[in-house]
Amino acid sequence: MTNERMNRRVRTGAVVLAVLMGVSSVTLLAGTAAERLGESATVLKEVMNAPDQGIPEDLLNSAYCVIIVPGVKQVALGIGGKYGRGFAVCRNRAGAAWGPPAAVRMEGGSVGFQIGASETDVVMLVMDQRSMNGVLSSKFTIGGAAEAAAGPVGRSSTAQTDATMRAKILSYSRSRGAFAGVALTGATLRQDLDENREMYNRQIENKTILKSGLKTPVGAEALIALLNKYSRKET
Image 1 (tube, rainbow, N blue to C red):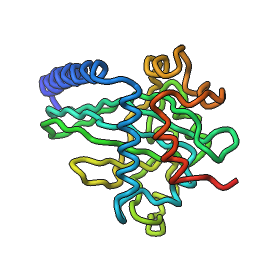
Image 2 (image 1 turned 90 degrees about the horizontal axis):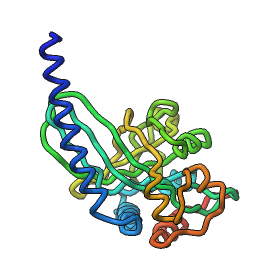
Image 3 (image 1 turned 180 degrees about the vertical axis):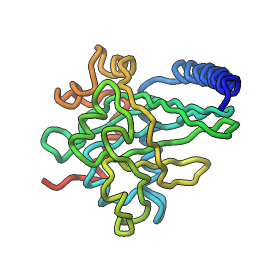
Image 4 (image 1 turned 120 degrees about the vertical axis):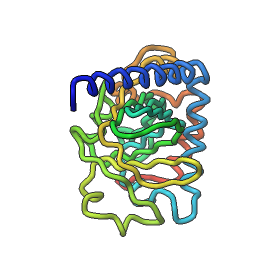
């Protein structure tokens, strides 16, 4: 690739990121944490109620954390990017019920011939303790420290591939009503301290939320209830 073509691609990428940040600014102002928690609960309920197209309950039963990012914004003009705000909910210290939500921001990019914009609901299952610790850190790259794969759909996970069985993070997306496993390798998750402050009335890091035994914040009751309904880890 010539220097001129590279410079042109960089300039295009800068424009896309500027547009994306404009979308993000609107997103930041458009809703509250409680509203996003409600959207996350709706996404989970609709996905799990989809006949033969939901997340297999045996996988959900085995997961250490569930991450839901409703309405991820994606913009692409040759170089693309994505941005969304959502929540990670992990098992409590007893390992059975689900603990309080920790806020996350999802960011990522892609290179290739792309144009347009879309909005997608993203759901991820974190399948091991080490990856759970990574998700709760200040910044975590999907597919970096933990192998990631598109998750299987259906009543059970018996048809999953070897790659899926080895994966530490299983990811899904829903766009225009279609729900399927999708590879999200390279996207990053950052803790959202502003959102945590809104939920808990003080600045608190995600890893502290899991360990502190905080009460479920206002707006999160429906999401936690749904997780406890669809999945209780055997101890």
